[in-house]
Amino acid sequence: MSIASSYPFLEVLWTMVIFFAFVVWIWLLFAVIADLFRRHDASGFAKVMWIIIVIVLPYLGVFVYLLIEHEGMTERSMKSQQAAQEQFDAYVQQTAGRADPAEQIAKAKQMLDSGTITQAEFEQIKQKALGAPTSP
Image (cartoon, rainbow, N blue to C red; front, side, top):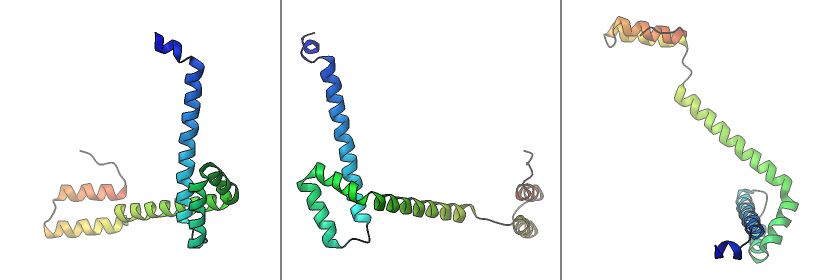
């Protein structure tokens, strides 16, 4: 009980607020540094100067960068997200494929004619290509 009396509830709350503020600042620091490396419009010298400012004056440097570059950060972040979405969409298209149902049935017919698949398997492929439910 002596520990609880020496560390009152309001101090616990204050410690949690300070810890949360520190975590938010660390997150902002990483966001600023990531944005600096993502920039293509800034020279290497400008990037180095921003890094020095952020290291020497950590809180002030991060907040000044956010005030000055907030619109650019938003644009770069949106472009990065768009590029990631486009890559994902292209991957899904490549993996899933967009085979024409007629093409799938023709391939299945060739496989049936060559003896690779049975008539029942051909019917299943045909039903799947046409989007009809298959019976087990």
